[in-house]
Length: 163
Image (tube, rainbow, N blue to C red; front, side, top):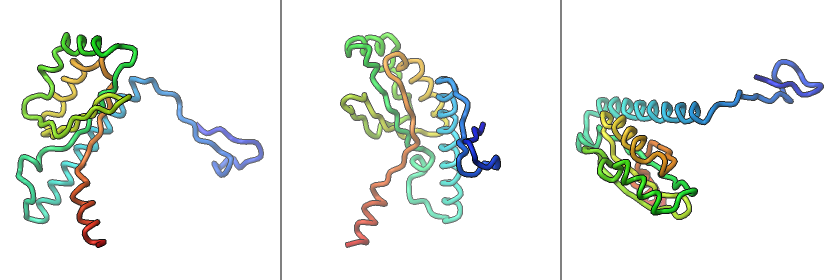
C-alpha cells in the first residue's frame, strides 16, 4: 500500500511512503525461517558450483557439505534460571541437542541475552536441528537462526596483505 502526502505526485515520487500490512508474529517467524532455509540452499548450491569449476577441494568433503548455523537461545526473562533448566530437562533438550551428526563449533553465554551456539550442520540434518529446538527449547528460550560463515581466514589474509 502507498499513502500519498498532500501536494505530491500520485506516481509514487517524493512524499509517498510505502506501508506494509501488519504481519502476525507467527507469520514473520515462518518467513524468517523460510529465508534462512533458502539462504542455506543457495550457499550450498554456490559452493558446489565453485568446487566443480575449480576442480579442487580445499576442505574435506564432510565440511564442504555442511553449513554453519548460529542459533540465539534468548532467555525467557519471565522465568528464573531454575525454571528454565527444569523446562529444558522436562522437554529432554539436553539429551537431544545437538542431534547426532551435528557439530557444536562454539557455545557462548551472552550476558543479558542468553546463549549463542554455532553449529556445523549437514543439509540433511537441518530439519532435525529445527525440530529439536522447537520441541526442546521453546518455552525456555526465544530462538533466532542465522546462516554463518567463518570470516577470520579472510580477515587474516586481508590484514597480512595490508602490512
